[in-house]
Image (cartoon, rainbow, N blue to C red; front, side, top):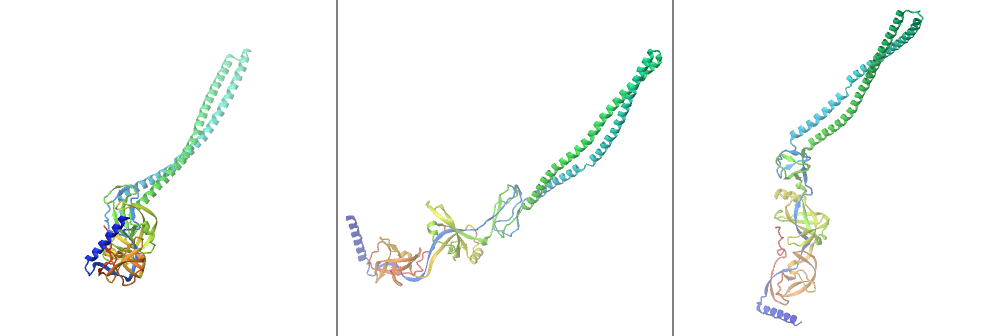
Length: 462
Protein backbone atom coordinates (compact mmCIF):
# COMPACT_ATOMS: atom_id res chain seq x y z
CA UNK A 1 0.00 0.00 0.00
CA UNK A 2 2.87 2.34 0.88
CA UNK A 3 4.49 1.47 -2.43
CA UNK A 4 1.36 2.47 -4.33
CA UNK A 5 1.20 5.76 -2.48
CA UNK A 6 4.85 6.45 -3.26
CA UNK A 7 4.32 5.65 -6.96
CA UNK A 8 1.26 7.91 -7.15
CA UNK A 9 3.20 10.71 -5.46
CA UNK A 10 6.10 10.28 -7.88
CA UNK A 11 3.75 10.44 -10.85
CA UNK A 12 2.11 13.59 -9.46
CA UNK A 13 5.49 15.24 -8.85
CA UNK A 14 6.62 14.31 -12.37
CA UNK A 15 3.43 15.74 -13.81
CA UNK A 16 3.81 19.01 -11.89
CA UNK A 17 7.42 19.26 -12.93
CA UNK A 18 6.45 18.73 -16.55
CA UNK A 19 3.78 21.39 -16.26
CA UNK A 20 6.31 23.83 -14.81
CA UNK A 21 8.84 23.00 -17.51
CA UNK A 22 6.39 23.34 -20.38
CA UNK A 23 6.16 26.88 -21.72
CA UNK A 24 2.95 28.83 -21.28
CA UNK A 25 2.15 28.05 -24.90
CA UNK A 26 1.61 24.38 -23.88
CA UNK A 27 2.88 20.95 -24.93
CA UNK A 28 2.57 20.47 -28.70
CA UNK A 29 0.19 17.61 -29.49
CA UNK A 30 -1.51 16.22 -32.58
CA UNK A 31 -5.25 16.84 -32.36
CA UNK A 32 -8.46 16.52 -34.31
CA UNK A 33 -11.99 17.86 -34.02
CA UNK A 34 -15.10 15.72 -33.76
CA UNK A 35 -16.65 15.85 -37.22
CA UNK A 36 -19.66 14.52 -39.02
CA UNK A 37 -18.87 12.00 -41.72
CA UNK A 38 -19.23 8.44 -42.95
CA UNK A 39 -17.93 5.44 -41.04
CA UNK A 40 -17.70 1.75 -41.75
CA UNK A 41 -17.06 -1.42 -39.83
CA UNK A 42 -15.04 -3.89 -41.85
CA UNK A 43 -12.99 -7.05 -41.73
CA UNK A 44 -9.65 -6.76 -43.49
CA UNK A 45 -7.57 -9.72 -44.59
CA UNK A 46 -5.00 -10.85 -47.12
CA UNK A 47 -6.46 -12.92 -49.93
CA UNK A 48 -5.70 -14.29 -53.37
CA UNK A 49 -7.47 -14.47 -56.69
CA UNK A 50 -8.62 -17.80 -58.02
CA UNK A 51 -10.85 -19.42 -60.61
CA UNK A 52 -13.97 -21.22 -59.36
CA UNK A 53 -13.26 -24.06 -61.77
CA UNK A 54 -10.09 -25.10 -63.54
CA UNK A 55 -10.67 -27.52 -66.41
CA UNK A 56 -8.10 -30.27 -66.80
CA UNK A 57 -7.35 -31.77 -70.19
CA UNK A 58 -6.20 -35.30 -69.31
CA UNK A 59 -4.80 -38.26 -71.19
CA UNK A 60 -7.78 -40.54 -72.00
CA UNK A 61 -5.75 -43.80 -71.99
CA UNK A 62 -2.20 -45.10 -72.19
CA UNK A 63 -0.83 -43.90 -75.53
CA UNK A 64 1.73 -41.67 -77.18
CA UNK A 65 0.69 -38.03 -77.07
CA UNK A 66 1.82 -35.66 -79.78
CA UNK A 67 3.77 -32.48 -79.03
CA UNK A 68 1.61 -29.74 -77.46
CA UNK A 69 2.44 -26.32 -78.86
CA UNK A 70 -0.06 -24.17 -76.95
CA UNK A 71 1.68 -21.92 -74.44
CA UNK A 72 0.34 -20.59 -71.14
CA UNK A 73 -1.93 -17.62 -71.74
CA UNK A 74 -2.99 -18.75 -75.22
CA UNK A 75 -6.72 -18.15 -75.77
CA UNK A 76 -8.69 -21.25 -76.76
CA UNK A 77 -12.25 -21.81 -77.93
CA UNK A 78 -14.64 -24.50 -76.80
CA UNK A 79 -14.11 -27.55 -79.04
CA UNK A 80 -10.71 -26.37 -80.28
CA UNK A 81 -8.12 -29.15 -80.56
CA UNK A 82 -5.48 -28.59 -77.87
CA UNK A 83 -3.72 -31.99 -77.86
CA UNK A 84 -3.86 -35.24 -79.81
CA UNK A 85 -2.71 -38.84 -79.55
CA UNK A 86 -0.23 -39.54 -82.38
CA UNK A 87 -2.56 -39.98 -85.43
CA UNK A 88 -0.55 -42.85 -86.94
CA UNK A 89 -0.94 -44.84 -83.72
CA UNK A 90 -4.70 -44.30 -83.82
CA UNK A 91 -4.81 -45.33 -87.49
CA UNK A 92 -2.80 -48.53 -86.95
CA UNK A 93 -4.83 -49.51 -83.89
CA UNK A 94 -8.06 -49.03 -85.81
CA UNK A 95 -6.83 -50.98 -88.82
CA UNK A 96 -5.63 -53.89 -86.64
CA UNK A 97 -9.01 -54.25 -84.94
CA UNK A 98 -10.89 -53.87 -88.23
CA UNK A 99 -8.71 -56.61 -89.78
CA UNK A 100 -9.57 -58.92 -86.86
CA UNK A 101 -13.29 -58.27 -87.44
CA UNK A 102 -13.02 -58.95 -91.16
CA UNK A 103 -10.98 -62.11 -90.57
CA UNK A 104 -13.59 -63.51 -88.21
CA UNK A 105 -16.39 -62.62 -90.62
CA UNK A 106 -14.55 -64.52 -93.38
CA UNK A 107 -13.96 -67.47 -91.05
CA UNK A 108 -17.66 -67.62 -90.20
CA UNK A 109 -18.56 -67.54 -93.91
CA UNK A 110 -16.11 -70.35 -94.59
CA UNK A 111 -17.33 -72.35 -91.60
CA UNK A 112 -21.00 -71.96 -92.60
CA UNK A 113 -20.36 -73.38 -96.11
CA UNK A 114 -21.55 -77.03 -95.84
CA UNK A 115 -22.02 -77.63 -99.56
CA UNK A 116 -19.21 -80.22 -99.65
CA UNK A 117 -20.60 -82.00 -96.59
CA UNK A 118 -24.11 -81.96 -98.07
CA UNK A 119 -22.86 -83.55 -101.28
CA UNK A 120 -20.87 -86.13 -99.33
CA UNK A 121 -23.94 -86.90 -97.22
CA UNK A 122 -26.11 -87.48 -100.28
CA UNK A 123 -23.44 -89.76 -101.77
CA UNK A 124 -23.06 -91.66 -98.51
CA UNK A 125 -26.82 -92.14 -98.20
CA UNK A 126 -26.99 -93.52 -101.73
CA UNK A 127 -24.07 -95.78 -100.95
CA UNK A 128 -25.91 -97.09 -97.91
CA UNK A 129 -29.02 -97.70 -100.02
CA UNK A 130 -27.03 -99.52 -102.70
CA UNK A 131 -25.15 -101.58 -100.12
CA UNK A 132 -28.44 -102.55 -98.49
CA UNK A 133 -29.71 -103.94 -101.79
CA UNK A 134 -26.44 -105.80 -102.36
CA UNK A 135 -26.61 -107.34 -98.88
CA UNK A 136 -30.20 -108.44 -99.48
CA UNK A 137 -29.18 -110.09 -102.76
CA UNK A 138 -26.24 -111.80 -101.07
CA UNK A 139 -28.51 -113.03 -98.29
CA UNK A 140 -30.86 -114.47 -100.89
CA UNK A 141 -27.95 -116.25 -102.58
CA UNK A 142 -26.78 -117.60 -99.24
CA UNK A 143 -30.25 -118.91 -98.47
CA UNK A 144 -30.41 -120.50 -101.93
CA UNK A 145 -27.00 -122.08 -101.41
CA UNK A 146 -28.15 -123.40 -98.07
CA UNK A 147 -31.23 -124.96 -99.67
CA UNK A 148 -29.06 -126.58 -102.33
CA UNK A 149 -26.71 -127.86 -99.64
CA UNK A 150 -29.59 -129.41 -97.75
CA UNK A 151 -30.95 -130.94 -100.95
CA UNK A 152 -27.51 -132.36 -101.84
CA UNK A 153 -27.27 -133.81 -98.35
CA UNK A 154 -30.63 -135.55 -98.61
CA UNK A 155 -29.73 -136.83 -102.08
CA UNK A 156 -26.43 -138.21 -100.79
CA UNK A 157 -28.22 -140.03 -97.99
CA UNK A 158 -30.71 -141.56 -100.40
CA UNK A 159 -28.02 -142.65 -102.89
CA UNK A 160 -25.98 -144.06 -100.06
CA UNK A 161 -28.94 -146.19 -98.97
CA UNK A 162 -29.65 -147.35 -102.47
CA UNK A 163 -26.00 -148.15 -102.99
CA UNK A 164 -26.13 -150.50 -100.09
CA UNK A 165 -28.92 -152.41 -101.89
CA UNK A 166 -26.96 -152.24 -105.11
CA UNK A 167 -29.74 -150.10 -106.60
CA UNK A 168 -27.29 -147.28 -107.29
CA UNK A 169 -23.87 -147.62 -108.72
CA UNK A 170 -20.64 -146.54 -107.11
CA UNK A 171 -20.33 -143.84 -109.71
CA UNK A 172 -23.75 -142.45 -108.82
CA UNK A 173 -22.79 -142.51 -105.13
CA UNK A 174 -19.54 -140.62 -105.79
CA UNK A 175 -21.39 -138.12 -107.95
CA UNK A 176 -23.85 -137.46 -105.10
CA UNK A 177 -20.92 -136.97 -102.72
CA UNK A 178 -19.31 -134.44 -105.12
CA UNK A 179 -22.56 -132.54 -105.48
CA UNK A 180 -22.89 -132.37 -101.70
CA UNK A 181 -19.31 -131.03 -101.35
CA UNK A 182 -19.88 -128.45 -104.13
CA UNK A 183 -23.10 -127.29 -102.47
CA UNK A 184 -21.31 -126.96 -99.10
CA UNK A 185 -18.52 -124.93 -100.62
CA UNK A 186 -20.92 -122.67 -102.49
CA UNK A 187 -22.90 -122.13 -99.32
CA UNK A 188 -19.79 -121.21 -97.35
CA UNK A 189 -18.75 -118.84 -100.13
CA UNK A 190 -22.11 -117.12 -100.20
CA UNK A 191 -22.19 -116.82 -96.39
CA UNK A 192 -18.72 -115.27 -96.33
CA UNK A 193 -19.68 -112.87 -99.07
CA UNK A 194 -22.86 -111.95 -97.15
CA UNK A 195 -20.85 -111.28 -94.00
CA UNK A 196 -18.43 -109.14 -95.96
CA UNK A 197 -21.23 -107.15 -97.55
CA UNK A 198 -22.95 -106.74 -94.15
CA UNK A 199 -19.70 -105.35 -92.71
CA UNK A 200 -19.44 -103.01 -95.66
CA UNK A 201 -23.02 -101.92 -95.07
CA UNK A 202 -22.24 -101.11 -91.43
CA UNK A 203 -19.25 -99.02 -92.51
CA UNK A 204 -21.36 -97.27 -95.17
CA UNK A 205 -24.05 -96.51 -92.60
CA UNK A 206 -21.42 -94.79 -90.35
CA UNK A 207 -20.43 -92.33 -93.09
CA UNK A 208 -23.70 -90.29 -93.11
CA UNK A 209 -23.54 -90.13 -89.30
CA UNK A 210 -19.96 -88.87 -89.46
CA UNK A 211 -20.92 -86.23 -92.02
CA UNK A 212 -23.91 -85.10 -89.95
CA UNK A 213 -21.62 -84.80 -86.90
CA UNK A 214 -19.25 -82.67 -88.96
CA UNK A 215 -22.14 -80.36 -89.91
CA UNK A 216 -23.23 -80.22 -86.27
CA UNK A 217 -19.68 -79.41 -85.18
CA UNK A 218 -19.63 -76.54 -87.68
CA UNK A 219 -22.79 -75.19 -86.06
CA UNK A 220 -21.03 -75.23 -82.68
CA UNK A 221 -17.95 -73.61 -84.22
CA UNK A 222 -20.25 -70.93 -85.69
CA UNK A 223 -21.47 -70.08 -82.17
CA UNK A 224 -17.87 -69.78 -80.91
CA UNK A 225 -16.88 -67.62 -83.89
CA UNK A 226 -19.96 -65.45 -83.31
CA UNK A 227 -18.76 -64.75 -79.78
CA UNK A 228 -15.26 -63.97 -81.04
CA UNK A 229 -16.72 -61.69 -83.70
CA UNK A 230 -18.84 -59.89 -81.11
CA UNK A 231 -15.72 -59.36 -78.99
CA UNK A 232 -13.77 -58.09 -81.98
CA UNK A 233 -16.64 -55.73 -82.88
CA UNK A 234 -16.62 -54.35 -79.32
CA UNK A 235 -12.88 -53.79 -79.65
CA UNK A 236 -13.49 -52.05 -82.98
CA UNK A 237 -16.12 -49.81 -81.37
CA UNK A 238 -13.68 -49.09 -78.54
CA UNK A 239 -10.98 -48.25 -81.08
CA UNK A 240 -13.44 -45.89 -82.80
CA UNK A 241 -14.25 -44.25 -79.47
CA UNK A 242 -10.54 -44.08 -78.59
CA UNK A 243 -9.85 -42.43 -81.93
CA UNK A 244 -12.39 -39.71 -81.08
CA UNK A 245 -11.18 -39.42 -77.50
CA UNK A 246 -7.62 -39.23 -78.75
CA UNK A 247 -8.41 -35.82 -80.20
CA UNK A 248 -8.51 -33.62 -77.08
CA UNK A 249 -10.43 -30.35 -77.22
CA UNK A 250 -10.92 -27.40 -74.91
CA UNK A 251 -14.04 -27.80 -72.76
CA UNK A 252 -14.68 -24.03 -72.58
CA UNK A 253 -13.79 -20.68 -74.09
CA UNK A 254 -10.83 -19.60 -72.01
CA UNK A 255 -7.05 -19.52 -71.83
CA UNK A 256 -4.35 -22.11 -71.23
CA UNK A 257 -3.36 -21.75 -67.57
CA UNK A 258 -0.63 -24.39 -67.49
CA UNK A 259 1.01 -26.75 -69.96
CA UNK A 260 2.30 -29.80 -68.10
CA UNK A 261 3.35 -31.86 -71.15
CA UNK A 262 5.02 -30.31 -74.18
CA UNK A 263 7.05 -32.96 -76.04
CA UNK A 264 5.76 -36.09 -77.77
CA UNK A 265 6.05 -39.05 -75.41
CA UNK A 266 4.35 -42.16 -74.09
CA UNK A 267 1.89 -41.00 -71.44
CA UNK A 268 -0.23 -42.98 -68.95
CA UNK A 269 -3.97 -42.53 -68.97
CA UNK A 270 -5.21 -39.87 -66.56
CA UNK A 271 -2.10 -37.69 -66.85
CA UNK A 272 -3.00 -33.97 -66.84
CA UNK A 273 -1.73 -32.40 -70.05
CA UNK A 274 -3.17 -28.88 -69.85
CA UNK A 275 -5.31 -26.78 -67.55
CA UNK A 276 -7.79 -24.30 -69.02
CA UNK A 277 -9.78 -21.60 -67.26
CA UNK A 278 -12.16 -18.70 -67.83
CA UNK A 279 -10.47 -15.52 -66.60
CA UNK A 280 -13.79 -13.68 -66.75
CA UNK A 281 -14.91 -15.91 -63.85
CA UNK A 282 -12.02 -14.72 -61.67
CA UNK A 283 -12.91 -14.38 -57.99
CA UNK A 284 -11.15 -13.96 -54.64
CA UNK A 285 -10.57 -16.44 -51.84
CA UNK A 286 -9.94 -15.09 -48.34
CA UNK A 287 -9.32 -17.11 -45.16
CA UNK A 288 -10.87 -15.01 -42.39
CA UNK A 289 -10.63 -15.57 -38.66
CA UNK A 290 -13.67 -17.40 -37.33
CA UNK A 291 -14.36 -14.72 -34.69
CA UNK A 292 -14.50 -12.09 -37.44
CA UNK A 293 -16.35 -14.02 -40.11
CA UNK A 294 -19.52 -14.13 -38.00
CA UNK A 295 -20.07 -10.45 -38.88
CA UNK A 296 -19.91 -11.12 -42.62
CA UNK A 297 -22.99 -11.82 -44.72
CA UNK A 298 -23.38 -12.77 -48.41
CA UNK A 299 -23.62 -9.71 -50.67
CA UNK A 300 -21.63 -7.53 -48.24
CA UNK A 301 -19.64 -4.95 -50.27
CA UNK A 302 -15.89 -5.45 -50.48
CA UNK A 303 -13.00 -3.11 -51.27
CA UNK A 304 -10.11 -4.87 -53.00
CA UNK A 305 -6.63 -3.36 -52.97
CA UNK A 306 -2.97 -4.23 -53.24
CA UNK A 307 -0.13 -3.92 -55.74
CA UNK A 308 -1.87 -6.32 -58.13
CA UNK A 309 -4.94 -4.06 -58.17
CA UNK A 310 -3.12 -0.78 -58.59
CA UNK A 311 -3.78 2.67 -57.16
CA UNK A 312 -7.56 2.50 -57.64
CA UNK A 313 -9.26 -0.03 -55.31
CA UNK A 314 -11.60 -2.49 -56.95
CA UNK A 315 -15.16 -3.25 -55.91
CA UNK A 316 -16.69 -6.61 -55.17
CA UNK A 317 -19.22 -8.48 -53.05
CA UNK A 318 -19.21 -11.54 -50.84
CA UNK A 319 -20.46 -14.48 -52.93
CA UNK A 320 -20.52 -17.21 -50.32
CA UNK A 321 -19.13 -18.25 -46.96
CA UNK A 322 -17.97 -21.81 -46.42
CA UNK A 323 -20.04 -23.63 -43.77
CA UNK A 324 -17.06 -25.03 -41.84
CA UNK A 325 -13.74 -23.68 -40.70
CA UNK A 326 -10.24 -25.11 -40.65
CA UNK A 327 -7.05 -24.78 -38.63
CA UNK A 328 -4.25 -22.67 -40.06
CA UNK A 329 -0.83 -21.84 -38.61
CA UNK A 330 0.01 -18.14 -38.91
CA UNK A 331 3.39 -16.78 -39.96
CA UNK A 332 4.17 -16.35 -36.24
CA UNK A 333 3.39 -20.00 -35.55
CA UNK A 334 0.03 -19.30 -33.91
CA UNK A 335 -2.75 -21.83 -34.47
CA UNK A 336 -5.85 -20.07 -35.82
CA UNK A 337 -9.34 -21.10 -36.82
CA UNK A 338 -10.29 -19.61 -40.14
CA UNK A 339 -13.23 -19.77 -42.52
CA UNK A 340 -12.99 -19.48 -46.29
CA UNK A 341 -14.94 -16.60 -47.87
CA UNK A 342 -15.40 -16.23 -51.63
CA UNK A 343 -15.64 -12.72 -53.07
CA UNK A 344 -16.79 -11.82 -56.54
CA UNK A 345 -15.51 -8.88 -58.59
CA UNK A 346 -17.75 -6.23 -60.04
CA UNK A 347 -17.94 -7.27 -63.72
CA UNK A 348 -16.85 -3.90 -65.13
CA UNK A 349 -14.03 -3.64 -62.59
CA UNK A 350 -12.76 -7.12 -63.41
CA UNK A 351 -12.76 -6.36 -67.11
CA UNK A 352 -10.70 -3.22 -66.43
CA UNK A 353 -8.25 -5.08 -64.21
CA UNK A 354 -7.75 -7.81 -66.76
CA UNK A 355 -7.23 -5.26 -69.50
CA UNK A 356 -5.03 -2.81 -67.61
CA UNK A 357 -3.31 -4.97 -64.99
CA UNK A 358 -3.38 -8.42 -66.57
CA UNK A 359 -4.92 -9.79 -63.38
CA UNK A 360 -5.05 -13.58 -63.23
CA UNK A 361 -5.47 -16.43 -60.75
CA UNK A 362 -3.22 -16.83 -57.68
CA UNK A 363 -2.49 -13.08 -57.41
CA UNK A 364 -2.11 -11.72 -53.87
CA UNK A 365 -4.60 -8.97 -52.93
CA UNK A 366 -6.09 -7.41 -49.82
CA UNK A 367 -9.81 -7.32 -49.12
CA UNK A 368 -11.87 -5.15 -46.82
CA UNK A 369 -15.34 -6.57 -46.23
CA UNK A 370 -17.76 -3.83 -45.18
CA UNK A 371 -19.96 -5.36 -42.47
CA UNK A 372 -21.78 -2.15 -41.38
CA UNK A 373 -21.75 1.53 -42.30
CA UNK A 374 -23.34 4.91 -41.71
CA UNK A 375 -23.26 7.72 -44.21
CA UNK A 376 -23.37 10.36 -41.42
CA UNK A 377 -22.11 10.00 -37.86
CA UNK A 378 -19.98 11.87 -35.31
CA UNK A 379 -16.50 10.43 -35.77
CA UNK A 380 -12.99 10.85 -34.44
CA UNK A 381 -9.77 9.08 -35.33
CA UNK A 382 -9.33 5.66 -33.73
CA UNK A 383 -5.95 6.69 -32.33
CA UNK A 384 -7.62 9.18 -29.95
CA UNK A 385 -9.54 6.50 -28.02
CA UNK A 386 -8.16 4.37 -25.19
CA UNK A 387 -9.50 2.13 -22.46
CA UNK A 388 -9.82 3.35 -18.90
CA UNK A 389 -9.02 1.14 -15.90
CA UNK A 390 -12.71 0.29 -15.57
CA UNK A 391 -12.86 -0.78 -19.24
CA UNK A 392 -14.74 2.28 -20.49
CA UNK A 393 -13.64 4.17 -23.59
CA UNK A 394 -12.03 7.55 -22.95
CA UNK A 395 -10.32 10.41 -24.80
CA UNK A 396 -8.23 13.40 -23.82
CA UNK A 397 -10.48 16.33 -24.63
CA UNK A 398 -8.98 19.81 -25.11
CA UNK A 399 -10.82 22.72 -23.52
CA UNK A 400 -9.27 26.22 -23.40
CA UNK A 401 -5.82 24.72 -24.03
CA UNK A 402 -6.08 22.25 -21.16
CA UNK A 403 -6.59 18.49 -21.48
CA UNK A 404 -9.00 16.36 -19.48
CA UNK A 405 -10.11 12.76 -19.66
CA UNK A 406 -13.56 12.35 -21.12
CA UNK A 407 -15.56 9.10 -20.97
CA UNK A 408 -17.40 8.38 -24.23
CA UNK A 409 -19.80 5.88 -25.70
CA UNK A 410 -18.97 4.42 -29.10
CA UNK A 411 -20.91 2.96 -32.02
CA UNK A 412 -19.29 1.70 -35.19
CA UNK A 413 -15.54 1.30 -34.99
CA UNK A 414 -12.69 0.35 -37.26
CA UNK A 415 -8.94 0.71 -37.35
CA UNK A 416 -9.26 4.29 -38.63
CA UNK A 417 -12.34 5.89 -37.05
CA UNK A 418 -14.71 5.58 -34.13
CA UNK A 419 -18.33 6.68 -34.01
CA UNK A 420 -19.17 8.78 -30.94
CA UNK A 421 -22.70 8.24 -29.64
CA UNK A 422 -22.28 10.09 -26.31
CA UNK A 423 -19.69 12.15 -24.40
CA UNK A 424 -18.60 14.49 -27.23
CA UNK A 425 -20.29 16.81 -29.70
CA UNK A 426 -19.34 18.03 -33.15
CA UNK A 427 -16.44 20.50 -33.03
CA UNK A 428 -14.96 19.21 -29.76
CA UNK A 429 -11.19 18.68 -29.85
CA UNK A 430 -9.33 15.52 -28.83
CA UNK A 431 -5.68 14.53 -28.60
CA UNK A 432 -4.45 11.96 -31.13
CA UNK A 433 -2.32 9.07 -29.85
CA UNK A 434 -1.84 10.60 -26.39
CA UNK A 435 1.48 9.87 -24.76
CA UNK A 436 1.67 8.21 -21.35
CA UNK A 437 3.19 11.39 -19.91
CA UNK A 438 0.02 13.37 -20.70
CA UNK A 439 -2.03 14.06 -17.56
CA UNK A 440 -5.25 15.89 -16.83
CA UNK A 441 -4.97 19.64 -16.52
CA UNK A 442 -1.85 19.85 -18.63
CA UNK A 443 -1.70 22.78 -21.04
CA UNK A 444 -1.21 21.76 -24.67
CA UNK A 445 -0.81 23.44 -28.01
CA UNK A 446 -2.90 21.41 -30.49
CA UNK A 447 -1.77 20.86 -34.03
CA UNK A 448 -5.08 20.10 -35.69
CA UNK A 449 -5.21 17.63 -38.54
CA UNK A 450 -8.10 17.00 -40.83
CA UNK A 451 -9.90 13.81 -39.83
CA UNK A 452 -9.45 12.42 -43.34
CA UNK A 453 -5.68 12.92 -43.25
CA UNK A 454 -5.28 10.86 -40.10
CA UNK A 455 -6.66 7.71 -41.69
CA UNK A 456 -3.81 5.19 -41.67
CA UNK A 457 -2.57 3.96 -44.98
CA UNK A 458 -3.93 0.53 -45.85
CA UNK A 459 -1.39 -2.13 -45.04
CA UNK A 460 0.28 -3.68 -48.02
CA UNK A 461 0.85 -7.30 -48.82
CA UNK A 462 4.22 -8.89 -48.53
